[in-house]
Length: 318
Length: 271
Image (cartoon, rainbow over the protein chains, first blue to last red):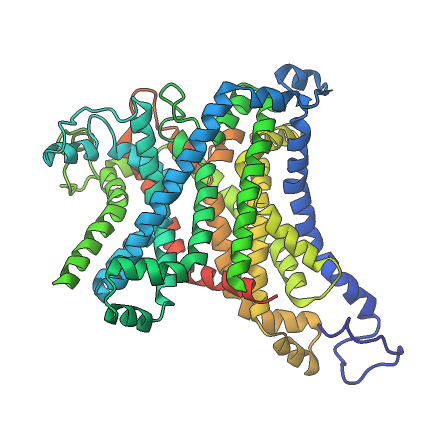
Protein backbone atom coordinates (compact mmCIF):
# COMPACT_ATOMS: atom_id res chain seq x y z
CA UNK A 1 0.00 0.00 0.00
CA UNK A 2 1.05 3.57 -0.46
CA UNK A 3 0.53 4.47 3.18
CA UNK A 4 3.85 3.51 4.62
CA UNK A 5 5.81 4.86 1.71
CA UNK A 6 4.63 8.48 1.96
CA UNK A 7 6.40 10.70 4.47
CA UNK A 8 4.25 11.30 7.55
CA UNK A 9 2.24 14.52 7.42
CA UNK A 10 1.02 16.70 10.21
CA UNK A 11 -1.85 15.40 12.28
CA UNK A 12 -4.28 17.52 10.26
CA UNK A 13 -6.88 15.37 8.51
CA UNK A 14 -5.94 14.63 4.95
CA UNK A 15 -8.88 15.11 2.61
CA UNK A 16 -7.52 13.11 -0.25
CA UNK A 17 -7.28 9.94 1.75
CA UNK A 18 -10.23 10.19 4.01
CA UNK A 19 -10.54 6.46 4.58
CA UNK A 20 -7.40 6.67 6.67
CA UNK A 21 -7.55 8.41 9.98
CA UNK A 22 -4.28 9.77 11.38
CA UNK A 23 -4.48 7.62 14.47
CA UNK A 24 -4.39 4.50 12.36
CA UNK A 25 -0.91 5.17 11.04
CA UNK A 26 1.05 3.34 13.71
CA UNK A 27 -1.64 0.69 13.76
CA UNK A 28 -1.31 0.08 10.05
CA UNK A 29 2.43 -0.27 10.40
CA UNK A 30 1.92 -3.03 12.95
CA UNK A 31 -0.94 -4.58 10.99
CA UNK A 32 1.07 -6.84 8.64
CA UNK A 33 2.96 -8.27 11.59
CA UNK A 34 -0.25 -8.94 13.46
CA UNK A 35 -1.69 -10.69 10.41
CA UNK A 36 1.46 -12.73 10.01
CA UNK A 37 1.82 -13.70 13.65
CA UNK A 38 -0.36 -16.84 13.79
CA UNK A 39 1.23 -18.33 10.67
CA UNK A 40 4.73 -17.46 11.86
CA UNK A 41 4.08 -19.02 15.26
CA UNK A 42 2.62 -22.09 13.62
CA UNK A 43 5.59 -22.58 11.34
CA UNK A 44 8.09 -21.91 14.13
CA UNK A 45 6.40 -24.24 16.58
CA UNK A 46 5.52 -27.10 14.30
CA UNK A 47 8.28 -27.11 11.72
CA UNK A 48 11.33 -25.17 12.82
CA UNK A 49 11.30 -26.43 16.39
CA UNK A 50 10.94 -30.12 15.42
CA UNK A 51 13.87 -29.73 13.04
CA UNK A 52 15.99 -28.30 15.87
CA UNK A 53 14.87 -31.11 18.10
CA UNK A 54 15.72 -33.63 15.44
CA UNK A 55 19.24 -32.26 15.17
CA UNK A 56 19.60 -32.17 18.96
CA UNK A 57 18.36 -35.74 19.29
CA UNK A 58 20.89 -36.92 16.77
CA UNK A 59 23.64 -35.89 19.22
CA UNK A 60 22.02 -37.62 22.21
CA UNK A 61 21.80 -41.12 23.48
CA UNK A 62 18.06 -41.45 23.53
CA UNK A 63 16.49 -44.85 23.83
CA UNK A 64 13.41 -46.01 25.66
CA UNK A 65 15.17 -46.18 29.04
CA UNK A 66 16.43 -42.60 28.71
CA UNK A 67 12.97 -41.47 27.75
CA UNK A 68 11.36 -43.08 30.75
CA UNK A 69 13.97 -41.73 33.15
CA UNK A 70 13.84 -38.41 31.29
CA UNK A 71 17.60 -38.16 31.20
CA UNK A 72 19.54 -36.55 28.41
CA UNK A 73 23.00 -37.81 27.63
CA UNK A 74 24.95 -35.95 25.02
CA UNK A 75 27.10 -38.32 23.06
CA UNK A 76 28.65 -36.06 20.45
CA UNK A 77 28.98 -37.70 17.06
CA UNK A 78 28.44 -41.25 18.36
CA UNK A 79 25.13 -41.71 16.56
CA UNK A 80 26.64 -40.53 13.30
CA UNK A 81 29.68 -42.77 13.57
CA UNK A 82 27.43 -45.67 14.42
CA UNK A 83 25.10 -44.95 11.50
CA UNK A 84 27.94 -44.39 9.06
CA UNK A 85 29.62 -47.65 10.07
CA UNK A 86 26.37 -49.62 10.08
CA UNK A 87 26.44 -52.04 7.13
CA UNK A 88 22.65 -51.82 6.90
CA UNK A 89 22.84 -48.07 6.31
CA UNK A 90 25.20 -48.71 3.43
CA UNK A 91 22.77 -51.18 1.89
CA UNK A 92 19.71 -49.02 2.43
CA UNK A 93 21.16 -45.73 1.17
CA UNK A 94 22.42 -46.96 -2.24
CA UNK A 95 19.25 -49.01 -2.58
CA UNK A 96 17.08 -45.96 -1.96
CA UNK A 97 19.08 -43.88 -4.43
CA UNK A 98 19.02 -46.60 -7.10
CA UNK A 99 15.31 -47.09 -6.51
CA UNK A 100 14.55 -43.37 -6.76
CA UNK A 101 16.66 -43.05 -9.92
CA UNK A 102 14.90 -46.03 -11.52
CA UNK A 103 11.44 -44.74 -10.64
CA UNK A 104 12.20 -41.16 -11.67
CA UNK A 105 13.84 -42.24 -14.93
CA UNK A 106 10.96 -44.52 -15.90
CA UNK A 107 8.43 -41.88 -14.88
CA UNK A 108 10.06 -39.27 -17.11
CA UNK A 109 10.42 -41.70 -20.01
CA UNK A 110 6.83 -42.97 -19.89
CA UNK A 111 5.53 -39.49 -19.10
CA UNK A 112 7.24 -38.12 -22.21
CA UNK A 113 5.85 -40.92 -24.38
CA UNK A 114 2.35 -40.17 -23.04
CA UNK A 115 2.80 -36.45 -23.73
CA UNK A 116 3.90 -37.16 -27.31
CA UNK A 117 0.88 -39.45 -27.75
CA UNK A 118 -1.38 -36.70 -26.41
CA UNK A 119 0.00 -34.25 -28.96
CA UNK A 120 -0.28 -36.61 -31.89
CA UNK A 121 -3.75 -37.98 -31.11
CA UNK A 122 -7.17 -36.93 -32.38
CA UNK A 123 -9.10 -34.70 -29.97
CA UNK A 124 -11.36 -37.50 -28.69
CA UNK A 125 -8.42 -39.84 -28.01
CA UNK A 126 -6.55 -36.99 -26.35
CA UNK A 127 -9.53 -36.33 -24.10
CA UNK A 128 -9.73 -40.04 -23.22
CA UNK A 129 -6.04 -40.33 -22.34
CA UNK A 130 -5.86 -37.08 -20.40
CA UNK A 131 -8.97 -37.98 -18.37
CA UNK A 132 -7.46 -41.38 -17.64
CA UNK A 133 -4.26 -39.72 -16.48
CA UNK A 134 -6.16 -37.32 -14.23
CA UNK A 135 -8.07 -40.20 -12.61
CA UNK A 136 -4.81 -41.99 -11.75
CA UNK A 137 -3.26 -38.70 -10.59
CA UNK A 138 -6.17 -37.99 -8.27
CA UNK A 139 -6.00 -41.43 -6.67
CA UNK A 140 -4.30 -41.13 -3.26
CA UNK A 141 -0.89 -42.85 -3.28
CA UNK A 142 -1.69 -45.36 -0.58
CA UNK A 143 -4.92 -46.33 -2.35
CA UNK A 144 -2.81 -46.99 -5.42
CA UNK A 145 -0.70 -49.35 -3.32
CA UNK A 146 -3.82 -51.05 -1.91
CA UNK A 147 -5.15 -51.68 -5.42
CA UNK A 148 -1.91 -52.86 -6.98
CA UNK A 149 -1.34 -55.23 -4.10
CA UNK A 150 -4.67 -56.81 -5.00
CA UNK A 151 -3.87 -56.84 -8.73
CA UNK A 152 -0.61 -58.69 -7.95
CA UNK A 153 -2.30 -61.15 -5.58
CA UNK A 154 -0.73 -64.56 -6.08
CA UNK A 155 -3.90 -66.63 -6.10
CA UNK A 156 -6.66 -64.40 -7.49
CA UNK A 157 -4.81 -61.39 -8.89
CA UNK A 158 -5.55 -60.09 -12.37
CA UNK A 159 -1.88 -59.76 -13.29
CA UNK A 160 -1.15 -63.46 -12.88
CA UNK A 161 -4.35 -64.28 -14.72
CA UNK A 162 -3.49 -62.03 -17.67
CA UNK A 163 0.08 -63.34 -17.86
CA UNK A 164 -1.20 -66.90 -17.93
CA UNK A 165 -4.00 -66.26 -20.43
CA UNK A 166 -1.70 -64.44 -22.85
CA UNK A 167 0.76 -67.31 -22.58
CA UNK A 168 3.60 -65.13 -21.30
CA UNK A 169 4.17 -67.41 -18.34
CA UNK A 170 2.42 -70.08 -16.34
CA UNK A 171 2.00 -67.67 -13.46
CA UNK A 172 -1.06 -68.96 -11.62
CA UNK A 173 -0.28 -68.89 -7.94
CA UNK A 174 2.98 -67.03 -8.45
CA UNK A 175 3.85 -64.92 -5.40
CA UNK A 176 5.27 -61.50 -6.29
CA UNK A 177 6.37 -60.62 -2.79
CA UNK A 178 8.63 -63.61 -2.14
CA UNK A 179 11.87 -62.29 -3.60
CA UNK A 180 13.43 -58.86 -3.24
CA UNK A 181 13.75 -58.30 -6.97
CA UNK A 182 10.12 -58.99 -7.78
CA UNK A 183 8.80 -57.12 -4.75
CA UNK A 184 10.88 -54.10 -5.81
CA UNK A 185 9.50 -54.45 -9.33
CA UNK A 186 5.94 -54.22 -7.98
CA UNK A 187 6.89 -51.13 -5.95
CA UNK A 188 8.33 -49.51 -9.07
CA UNK A 189 5.09 -50.22 -10.94
CA UNK A 190 3.02 -48.69 -8.13
CA UNK A 191 5.11 -45.55 -7.96
CA UNK A 192 5.49 -45.03 -11.69
CA UNK A 193 1.76 -45.56 -12.23
CA UNK A 194 1.00 -42.83 -9.70
CA UNK A 195 3.73 -40.43 -10.83
CA UNK A 196 3.45 -40.53 -14.62
CA UNK A 197 0.22 -38.46 -14.92
CA UNK A 198 1.72 -35.31 -13.40
CA UNK A 199 4.84 -35.62 -15.55
CA UNK A 200 2.89 -36.45 -18.73
CA UNK A 201 0.55 -33.48 -18.37
CA UNK A 202 3.41 -31.11 -17.49
CA UNK A 203 5.48 -32.22 -20.47
CA UNK A 204 2.41 -31.98 -22.69
CA UNK A 205 1.91 -28.41 -21.46
CA UNK A 206 5.55 -27.74 -22.35
CA UNK A 207 5.16 -29.32 -25.80
CA UNK A 208 2.34 -26.92 -26.61
CA UNK A 209 4.71 -23.98 -26.16
CA UNK A 210 7.08 -25.30 -28.84
CA UNK A 211 6.24 -23.42 -32.07
CA UNK A 212 5.09 -25.91 -34.74
CA UNK A 213 7.08 -24.00 -37.38
CA UNK A 214 10.28 -25.34 -35.83
CA UNK A 215 9.13 -28.90 -36.36
CA UNK A 216 7.96 -28.09 -39.84
CA UNK A 217 11.31 -26.58 -40.75
CA UNK A 218 13.21 -29.56 -39.34
CA UNK A 219 10.97 -31.98 -41.21
CA UNK A 220 11.52 -30.10 -44.47
CA UNK A 221 15.24 -30.42 -43.81
CA UNK A 222 14.75 -34.18 -43.61
CA UNK A 223 14.92 -34.82 -39.86
CA UNK A 224 13.07 -37.88 -38.49
CA UNK A 225 10.80 -37.84 -35.46
CA UNK A 226 13.52 -39.02 -33.05
CA UNK A 227 15.97 -36.47 -34.37
CA UNK A 228 13.38 -33.68 -34.05
CA UNK A 229 12.71 -34.66 -30.44
CA UNK A 230 16.33 -34.73 -29.36
CA UNK A 231 17.52 -31.73 -31.39
CA UNK A 232 14.57 -29.37 -30.98
CA UNK A 233 11.94 -30.39 -28.44
CA UNK A 234 14.17 -31.67 -25.66
CA UNK A 235 16.60 -28.72 -25.61
CA UNK A 236 13.65 -26.31 -25.51
CA UNK A 237 12.01 -28.21 -22.67
CA UNK A 238 15.22 -28.77 -20.72
CA UNK A 239 14.18 -26.51 -17.79
CA UNK A 240 10.88 -28.37 -17.48
CA UNK A 241 12.74 -31.67 -17.44
CA UNK A 242 15.19 -30.48 -14.79
CA UNK A 243 12.32 -29.50 -12.51
CA UNK A 244 10.41 -32.73 -13.12
CA UNK A 245 13.50 -34.86 -12.55
CA UNK A 246 14.40 -33.21 -9.26
CA UNK A 247 10.78 -33.28 -8.01
CA UNK A 248 10.43 -36.96 -8.94
CA UNK A 249 13.69 -37.84 -7.21
CA UNK A 250 12.61 -36.05 -4.04
CA UNK A 251 9.23 -37.80 -4.03
CA UNK A 252 10.68 -41.22 -4.79
CA UNK A 253 13.41 -40.96 -2.15
CA UNK A 254 10.94 -40.59 0.68
CA UNK A 255 8.37 -43.24 -0.23
CA UNK A 256 6.75 -44.78 2.80
CA UNK A 257 3.03 -45.61 2.44
CA UNK A 258 3.53 -47.50 -0.83
CA UNK A 259 5.98 -49.81 0.93
CA UNK A 260 4.01 -50.05 4.14
CA UNK A 261 0.86 -51.14 2.32
CA UNK A 262 2.62 -53.83 0.31
CA UNK A 263 5.88 -55.34 1.55
CA UNK A 264 6.53 -53.53 4.87
CA UNK A 265 10.19 -53.71 3.84
CA UNK A 266 10.18 -57.46 3.29
CA UNK A 267 10.98 -60.10 2.24
CA UNK A 268 14.07 -60.29 4.47
CA UNK A 269 14.31 -56.47 4.61
CA UNK A 270 15.07 -56.37 0.88
CA UNK A 271 12.70 -53.45 0.19
CA UNK A 272 13.63 -51.32 3.20
CA UNK A 273 14.19 -47.76 1.95
CA UNK A 274 15.29 -44.77 4.03
CA UNK A 275 11.78 -43.89 5.26
CA UNK A 276 11.07 -47.43 6.47
CA UNK A 277 14.59 -47.68 7.93
CA UNK A 278 14.01 -44.58 10.07
CA UNK A 279 10.60 -45.86 11.14
CA UNK A 280 11.98 -49.28 12.13
CA UNK A 281 14.90 -47.83 14.05
CA UNK A 282 13.06 -44.96 15.68
CA UNK A 283 9.46 -45.94 16.32
CA UNK A 284 9.75 -49.74 16.38
CA UNK A 285 13.12 -50.17 18.12
CA UNK A 286 12.89 -46.90 20.13
CA UNK A 287 16.45 -45.91 19.24
CA UNK A 288 15.47 -42.30 18.82
CA UNK A 289 18.99 -40.86 18.77
CA UNK A 290 20.31 -43.27 16.15
CA UNK A 291 17.21 -42.87 14.00
CA UNK A 292 17.46 -39.09 14.23
CA UNK A 293 20.98 -39.15 12.84
CA UNK A 294 19.69 -41.07 9.81
CA UNK A 295 16.80 -38.62 9.47
CA UNK A 296 19.24 -35.68 9.55
CA UNK A 297 21.33 -37.27 6.80
CA UNK A 298 18.21 -37.91 4.74
CA UNK A 299 17.03 -34.33 5.23
CA UNK A 300 20.40 -32.98 4.08
CA UNK A 301 20.18 -35.14 0.98
CA UNK A 302 16.64 -34.00 0.17
CA UNK A 303 17.27 -30.34 0.96
CA UNK A 304 20.28 -30.52 -1.35
CA UNK A 305 18.03 -31.86 -4.08
CA UNK A 306 15.37 -29.23 -3.34
CA UNK A 307 17.98 -26.55 -3.62
CA UNK A 308 18.70 -27.78 -7.14
CA UNK A 309 14.95 -27.58 -7.74
CA UNK A 310 14.67 -23.96 -6.62
CA UNK A 311 17.67 -23.05 -8.74
CA UNK A 312 16.09 -24.72 -11.75
CA UNK A 313 12.83 -22.87 -11.08
CA UNK A 314 14.61 -19.53 -10.93
CA UNK A 315 16.51 -20.28 -14.11
CA UNK A 316 13.27 -21.03 -15.87
CA UNK A 317 11.68 -17.83 -14.58
CA UNK A 318 14.54 -15.65 -15.84
CA UNK B 1 -3.45 -44.69 -40.76
CA UNK B 2 -0.73 -43.39 -38.47
CA UNK B 3 -3.30 -41.28 -36.65
CA UNK B 4 -5.42 -44.40 -36.07
CA UNK B 5 -2.45 -46.20 -34.54
CA UNK B 6 -1.75 -43.26 -32.25
CA UNK B 7 -5.38 -43.18 -31.16
CA UNK B 8 -5.37 -46.88 -30.38
CA UNK B 9 -2.18 -46.44 -28.38
CA UNK B 10 -3.86 -43.61 -26.47
CA UNK B 11 -6.75 -45.85 -25.55
CA UNK B 12 -4.44 -48.65 -24.43
CA UNK B 13 -2.39 -46.33 -22.22
CA UNK B 14 -5.61 -44.82 -20.88
CA UNK B 15 -6.77 -48.34 -19.99
CA UNK B 16 -3.53 -48.98 -18.12
CA UNK B 17 -4.08 -45.90 -15.95
CA UNK B 18 -7.80 -46.33 -15.40
CA UNK B 19 -7.94 -50.10 -14.99
CA UNK B 20 -6.67 -50.26 -11.37
CA UNK B 21 -9.28 -47.72 -10.28
CA UNK B 22 -11.95 -49.58 -12.23
CA UNK B 23 -10.86 -52.83 -10.62
CA UNK B 24 -11.10 -51.32 -7.15
CA UNK B 25 -14.67 -50.16 -7.72
CA UNK B 26 -15.81 -53.38 -9.41
CA UNK B 27 -14.17 -55.67 -6.87
CA UNK B 28 -16.22 -53.84 -4.27
CA UNK B 29 -19.33 -54.81 -6.23
CA UNK B 30 -18.61 -58.55 -6.32
CA UNK B 31 -19.44 -61.29 -3.81
CA UNK B 32 -16.55 -63.24 -2.33
CA UNK B 33 -17.26 -66.14 -4.66
CA UNK B 34 -16.47 -63.87 -7.63
CA UNK B 35 -13.52 -62.16 -5.97
CA UNK B 36 -11.81 -65.39 -5.01
CA UNK B 37 -11.95 -66.90 -8.48
CA UNK B 38 -9.14 -68.05 -10.71
CA UNK B 39 -10.76 -66.57 -13.80
CA UNK B 40 -11.78 -63.06 -12.75
CA UNK B 41 -14.99 -61.55 -14.11
CA UNK B 42 -14.31 -58.31 -15.94
CA UNK B 43 -17.76 -56.92 -15.17
CA UNK B 44 -19.51 -57.65 -11.87
CA UNK B 45 -22.70 -59.51 -12.74
CA UNK B 46 -25.02 -59.31 -11.02
CA UNK B 47 -23.97 -56.17 -9.16
CA UNK B 48 -23.69 -57.08 -5.53
CA UNK B 49 -23.94 -54.38 -2.85
CA UNK B 50 -23.18 -56.49 0.22
CA UNK B 51 -19.62 -55.19 0.65
CA UNK B 52 -20.90 -51.65 0.85
CA UNK B 53 -23.72 -52.73 3.14
CA UNK B 54 -21.22 -54.48 5.37
CA UNK B 55 -18.97 -51.43 5.54
CA UNK B 56 -21.79 -48.96 6.08
CA UNK B 57 -23.01 -50.93 9.09
CA UNK B 58 -19.52 -51.47 10.56
CA UNK B 59 -18.85 -49.32 13.61
CA UNK B 60 -15.14 -49.22 12.70
CA UNK B 61 -15.97 -47.46 9.45
CA UNK B 62 -18.09 -44.79 11.10
CA UNK B 63 -15.49 -44.21 13.81
CA UNK B 64 -12.85 -43.78 11.15
CA UNK B 65 -15.12 -41.51 9.11
CA UNK B 66 -15.74 -39.35 12.17
CA UNK B 67 -12.01 -39.18 12.95
CA UNK B 68 -11.16 -38.26 9.38
CA UNK B 69 -13.88 -35.61 9.15
CA UNK B 70 -12.96 -34.06 12.50
CA UNK B 71 -9.26 -33.93 11.74
CA UNK B 72 -9.57 -32.68 8.16
CA UNK B 73 -12.28 -30.18 9.13
CA UNK B 74 -10.10 -28.69 11.85
CA UNK B 75 -7.06 -28.59 9.58
CA UNK B 76 -8.93 -26.80 6.81
CA UNK B 77 -10.76 -24.26 9.00
CA UNK B 78 -7.80 -23.35 11.20
CA UNK B 79 -5.36 -23.52 8.33
CA UNK B 80 -7.41 -21.26 6.07
CA UNK B 81 -7.94 -18.63 8.76
CA UNK B 82 -4.27 -18.51 9.65
CA UNK B 83 -2.88 -18.68 6.14
CA UNK B 84 -5.35 -16.19 4.72
CA UNK B 85 -4.27 -13.52 7.21
CA UNK B 86 -0.63 -14.21 6.39
CA UNK B 87 -1.36 -14.14 2.65
CA UNK B 88 -2.99 -10.72 2.95
CA UNK B 89 -0.01 -9.39 4.87
CA UNK B 90 2.40 -10.70 2.25
CA UNK B 91 0.39 -9.60 -0.78
CA UNK B 92 -0.81 -6.18 0.36
CA UNK B 93 1.91 -4.72 2.58
CA UNK B 94 5.56 -3.89 2.14
CA UNK B 95 7.24 -4.33 5.50
CA UNK B 96 10.57 -5.25 6.95
CA UNK B 97 11.10 -9.01 7.03
CA UNK B 98 8.65 -9.72 4.22
CA UNK B 99 11.22 -11.23 1.86
CA UNK B 100 12.75 -13.19 4.70
CA UNK B 101 9.37 -14.66 5.56
CA UNK B 102 8.69 -15.60 1.94
CA UNK B 103 12.08 -17.27 1.74
CA UNK B 104 11.42 -19.11 5.00
CA UNK B 105 8.16 -20.43 3.57
CA UNK B 106 9.97 -21.84 0.56
CA UNK B 107 12.77 -23.37 2.63
CA UNK B 108 10.41 -24.89 5.16
CA UNK B 109 8.59 -26.73 2.38
CA UNK B 110 11.79 -28.62 1.59
CA UNK B 111 11.80 -30.33 4.98
CA UNK B 112 10.68 -33.91 4.38
CA UNK B 113 7.88 -34.82 6.77
CA UNK B 114 9.17 -38.40 6.74
CA UNK B 115 12.29 -37.26 8.60
CA UNK B 116 10.31 -35.72 11.44
CA UNK B 117 8.62 -38.88 12.77
CA UNK B 118 10.73 -38.90 15.89
CA UNK B 119 10.65 -35.27 17.05
CA UNK B 120 6.90 -35.11 16.40
CA UNK B 121 6.38 -38.35 18.26
CA UNK B 122 8.38 -37.13 21.26
CA UNK B 123 6.91 -33.61 21.21
CA UNK B 124 3.35 -34.90 21.20
CA UNK B 125 4.22 -37.47 23.84
CA UNK B 126 5.58 -34.75 26.13
CA UNK B 127 2.50 -32.60 25.50
CA UNK B 128 0.32 -35.66 26.22
CA UNK B 129 -1.18 -35.34 22.76
CA UNK B 130 -0.06 -38.71 21.46
CA UNK B 131 -3.01 -40.60 20.04
CA UNK B 132 -5.29 -37.55 20.07
CA UNK B 133 -6.96 -35.72 17.20
CA UNK B 134 -5.37 -32.45 18.34
CA UNK B 135 -1.91 -33.93 17.91
CA UNK B 136 -2.68 -35.07 14.39
CA UNK B 137 -4.20 -31.69 13.52
CA UNK B 138 -1.00 -29.96 14.64
CA UNK B 139 1.12 -32.20 12.45
CA UNK B 140 -1.11 -31.77 9.40
CA UNK B 141 -1.22 -28.00 9.87
CA UNK B 142 2.53 -27.90 9.78
CA UNK B 143 2.55 -29.66 6.42
CA UNK B 144 -0.27 -27.69 4.81
CA UNK B 145 0.33 -24.20 6.20
CA UNK B 146 3.40 -23.06 4.23
CA UNK B 147 1.92 -24.26 0.97
CA UNK B 148 -1.47 -22.70 1.71
CA UNK B 149 0.13 -19.33 2.54
CA UNK B 150 2.10 -19.48 -0.68
CA UNK B 151 -0.89 -20.37 -2.81
CA UNK B 152 -3.26 -17.84 -1.22
CA UNK B 153 -0.71 -15.09 -1.56
CA UNK B 154 -0.83 -15.73 -5.29
CA UNK B 155 -4.60 -15.37 -5.35
CA UNK B 156 -4.62 -12.17 -3.26
CA UNK B 157 -1.85 -10.64 -5.36
CA UNK B 158 -3.88 -11.37 -8.48
CA UNK B 159 -6.61 -8.97 -7.28
CA UNK B 160 -5.39 -5.46 -8.20
CA UNK B 161 -4.86 -3.24 -5.16
CA UNK B 162 -6.41 -0.38 -7.15
CA UNK B 163 -9.85 -1.94 -6.69
CA UNK B 164 -9.48 -1.68 -2.95
CA UNK B 165 -8.06 1.83 -3.14
CA UNK B 166 -10.99 2.89 -5.30
CA UNK B 167 -13.39 1.61 -2.67
CA UNK B 168 -11.49 3.48 0.02
CA UNK B 169 -11.58 6.70 -2.02
CA UNK B 170 -15.33 6.19 -2.16
CA UNK B 171 -15.40 6.20 1.63
CA UNK B 172 -15.06 2.58 2.62
CA UNK B 173 -12.80 1.73 5.53
CA UNK B 174 -9.88 -0.54 4.81
CA UNK B 175 -11.71 -3.44 6.42
CA UNK B 176 -14.90 -2.76 4.45
CA UNK B 177 -12.95 -2.44 1.21
CA UNK B 178 -11.35 -5.73 1.94
CA UNK B 179 -14.50 -7.55 2.91
CA UNK B 180 -16.69 -6.22 0.11
CA UNK B 181 -14.24 -5.96 -2.77
CA UNK B 182 -11.25 -8.21 -2.31
CA UNK B 183 -12.77 -11.10 -0.40
CA UNK B 184 -15.39 -12.05 -3.02
CA UNK B 185 -12.69 -12.02 -5.68
CA UNK B 186 -10.37 -14.20 -3.62
CA UNK B 187 -13.12 -16.61 -2.53
CA UNK B 188 -12.57 -19.07 -5.41
CA UNK B 189 -8.88 -19.17 -4.58
CA UNK B 190 -9.69 -19.72 -0.95
CA UNK B 191 -11.93 -22.57 -2.01
CA UNK B 192 -9.19 -24.15 -4.14
CA UNK B 193 -6.64 -23.82 -1.37
CA UNK B 194 -8.96 -25.38 1.20
CA UNK B 195 -9.63 -28.30 -1.10
CA UNK B 196 -5.90 -28.73 -1.50
CA UNK B 197 -5.33 -28.80 2.25
CA UNK B 198 -8.31 -31.06 2.65
CA UNK B 199 -6.92 -33.60 0.18
CA UNK B 200 -3.52 -33.53 1.90
CA UNK B 201 -5.00 -34.18 5.33
CA UNK B 202 -7.66 -36.64 4.13
CA UNK B 203 -5.18 -38.88 2.33
CA UNK B 204 -2.31 -38.75 4.85
CA UNK B 205 -1.44 -42.19 6.12
CA UNK B 206 2.01 -42.23 7.68
CA UNK B 207 1.57 -39.89 10.63
CA UNK B 208 -1.91 -41.13 11.42
CA UNK B 209 -0.42 -44.62 11.54
CA UNK B 210 2.49 -43.58 13.77
CA UNK B 211 0.55 -41.32 16.13
CA UNK B 212 -2.83 -42.99 16.60
CA UNK B 213 -2.71 -46.16 18.66
CA UNK B 214 -6.35 -46.68 19.58
CA UNK B 215 -8.43 -48.39 16.85
CA UNK B 216 -11.43 -46.25 17.83
CA UNK B 217 -9.52 -43.15 16.74
CA UNK B 218 -8.13 -44.52 13.46
CA UNK B 219 -8.62 -42.24 10.49
CA UNK B 220 -9.86 -43.79 7.26
CA UNK B 221 -6.40 -44.49 5.76
CA UNK B 222 -5.33 -46.38 8.89
CA UNK B 223 -8.68 -48.17 8.93
CA UNK B 224 -8.15 -49.25 5.32
CA UNK B 225 -4.71 -50.52 6.24
CA UNK B 226 -6.14 -52.55 9.11
CA UNK B 227 -7.88 -54.82 6.56
CA UNK B 228 -4.54 -56.24 5.54
CA UNK B 229 -4.22 -59.41 7.57
CA UNK B 230 -1.16 -61.47 8.20
CA UNK B 231 -2.27 -64.25 5.88
CA UNK B 232 -5.27 -63.00 3.97
CA UNK B 233 -6.90 -59.70 3.18
CA UNK B 234 -10.64 -59.19 3.11
CA UNK B 235 -10.58 -57.64 -0.36
CA UNK B 236 -14.31 -57.03 -0.92
CA UNK B 237 -14.91 -54.73 2.05
CA UNK B 238 -11.44 -53.17 1.73
CA UNK B 239 -12.11 -52.16 -1.88
CA UNK B 240 -15.55 -50.85 -0.84
CA UNK B 241 -14.01 -48.50 1.76
CA UNK B 242 -11.23 -47.57 -0.65
CA UNK B 243 -13.85 -46.63 -3.25
CA UNK B 244 -15.91 -44.55 -0.82
CA UNK B 245 -12.70 -42.90 0.35
CA UNK B 246 -11.36 -42.11 -3.12
CA UNK B 247 -14.56 -40.86 -4.73
CA UNK B 248 -14.68 -37.40 -3.10
CA UNK B 249 -10.95 -36.94 -3.66
CA UNK B 250 -11.27 -37.51 -7.40
CA UNK B 251 -14.29 -35.21 -7.63
CA UNK B 252 -12.61 -32.38 -5.72
CA UNK B 253 -9.39 -32.91 -7.59
CA UNK B 254 -11.16 -32.46 -10.92
CA UNK B 255 -12.77 -29.25 -9.66
CA UNK B 256 -9.60 -27.56 -8.45
CA UNK B 257 -6.93 -28.92 -10.76
CA UNK B 258 -6.89 -26.00 -13.19
CA UNK B 259 -7.51 -23.30 -10.64
CA UNK B 260 -4.76 -24.55 -8.34
CA UNK B 261 -2.25 -24.40 -11.14
CA UNK B 262 -3.39 -20.85 -11.96
CA UNK B 263 -2.94 -19.76 -8.33
CA UNK B 264 0.51 -21.27 -8.16
CA UNK B 265 1.72 -19.53 -11.26
CA UNK B 266 0.16 -16.22 -10.18
CA UNK B 267 2.08 -16.55 -6.94
CA UNK B 268 5.26 -17.34 -8.82
CA UNK B 269 5.19 -14.51 -11.30
CA UNK B 270 4.27 -11.55 -9.14
CA UNK B 271 6.77 -10.48 -6.51
